Length: 380
Image (cartoon, rainbow, N blue to C red):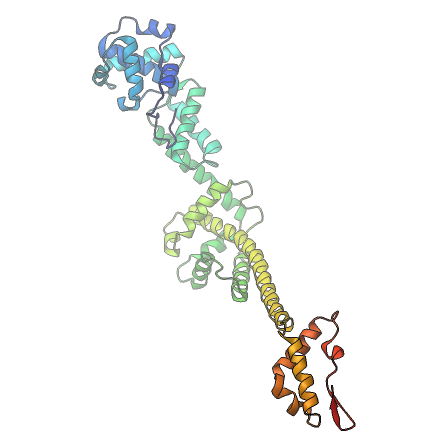
């Protein structure tokens, strides 16, 4: 019954849901016995709440108002009386013991808390990072074990997170071996090369181009020289590794130096390993994009050339008539003097280009022969 935000019991209930979840059954009425007033109403609400949640409410506002009004009608007590039910009173403590016994639960011990911390650290924290969900996991585990959740759930969650982090760091450092020292040197005082590498790892490739490709190759070679072992985070959840990477990418060398050494090494390892993989993927994408860009430019260049060659010359028949008329009218003139002024040299060149671009079409100059000299005359 935890709401979507993980903040507690939802407050919006349909009438059908209220009837289904908050109705008192035969055994419940036996527990109510001769209780009256606010005590009667409060006990019934506590009983049904525990059945639903496996825990007691921390404050009366956790119990949804539709449930208060419905149960109040069942037990014939005004709903306003519930405000008088003091959760810290001795009577309520007795009610809790009575409800636990009736439902087969027992209070949590310190040994239970230690077991919950170990279970949460080993099984849940490596794959779940949201505190509300960790808290919910504790409640589910307690309910499965028929244990009333301890009042210090936040302490359990925090202790489990610290334990899981320590184990993760120890495992990472063990796998790094001698590489751990090289990572520490990156953030050492006065190591400008290390600071420059970290800064470059935080930058994106930028626009597609040869320069960005070469920059990413240099960056990849630099991080590979650290010698991170293969499979360093193979058995680590992507969510956990992403969280450590996100922490590291916001930090400056001075921030790393102020962090405990085991966490410092793990943060640097998570950043470098993640970025090494990401840069490799980015290089592939950059190379593909660069090839596509080169191809696109080549295609546009070819298209421009083809367009120029395939450009149709309008009014070819008229042009040919003008050429023939000029050739007949000025049979003794040379071609440049007789014909170019009539049509234009560019138009003639366009006609030739069009004819060459269509090899299957009879060549213009073959259909109507260009004028040539014969017996001192220009003959069409």
